Image 1: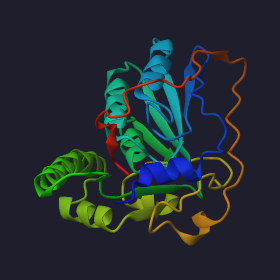
Image 2: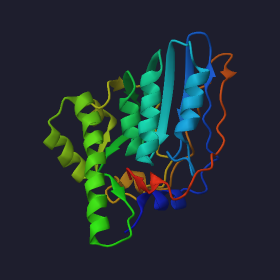
Image 3: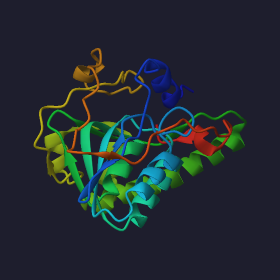
Image 4: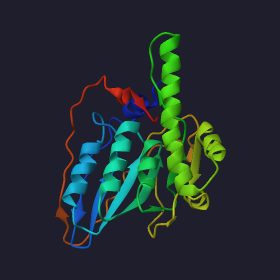
Length: 248
């Protein structure tokens, strides 16, 4: 079985060194989730948790997202940290929120999406090796994981479960306008049109426009007199952990 996460990592291995940079003033903080979601090969839950801890006491955190997704368990930990944060979190989909990144976006109080950005949902998948019993057990686990993800989507959109399941089965890519119309996002960002920065050939139904050579990454916002609160450093973890089961 082809592992989409591994292909995404391989196809984008030359991407800029990932970083989570929290910038703050008295009124707000900015955190960037501009990478794969993974403790080994991207941004981890620990990175986002540290950034949120550094923003403690600030009323508004703006979480900027440009991610093709990753480890579903890391994403659930990030969501839990967001829900514990005492202030308001606004998710800004600057270019792409796909797979596990979508649930993170929906954990925010408000979801803002840039024109030209995409929001993609699909079924959970995993790489598995073993006999028929192991494969059936893995399929059952994937269905449980999908149940949690479906709950994220129905809770935000109010759409019927079957409609969400159909969209996930089809690997559905929503444009910014479609994501707003279907209730995944709340409003358009007042920014320039977004450009894709990822090689997305790992996905079978990515829009043709997104399969062109990726553009340079969008420049992060530059608030006045920012104070850095957290820099990302790659964490080490057991490569055989349950992260082998991910939402890609």
